[in-house]
Image (cartoon, rainbow, N blue to C red):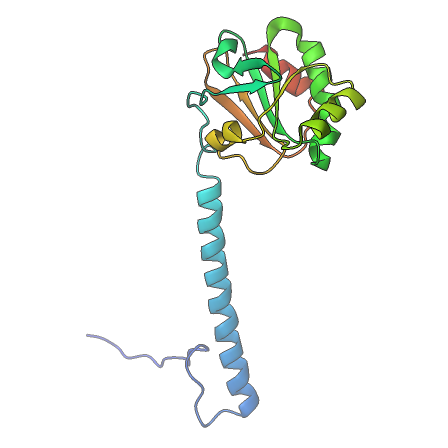
Length: 193
């Protein structure tokens, strides 16, 4: 046997003519805000899930190989197999790239021959690139890829962007934006590869 109990009015139910205009507005406003909050939360979670679902693209994959010929020398990424590579895409016109370059130079000095820092410039202007190298005493392996073919293989378009590649040629880390490459954590990480 079912017993019928009185049902309280649902605050989300449409307002009736018995309620004041202010109450009608309040009920409708509350309902709208609640639905908007639910939708916002749902879409935010979906975006976060897609951005943070596991690893960034290419992590754990073999680094795409490329060759760049600059000033008569050809550099091929695969020539460094057997030791870690810090692959940095940068440009002389990019303020964050310029700001992080001294720490990349320091990283190479601290790593010695245990790893290679390869800085691929995406400058289209050869003179600006060479002037930057001279003015800033850049003492690490850098080449200019004016056609921007190497960074296109990685889907890189925000500079600076850096990939850490282990000695087997697999991408193990990705950094977007300016970094301080002299921190003990980064040095220990690269040395541990």
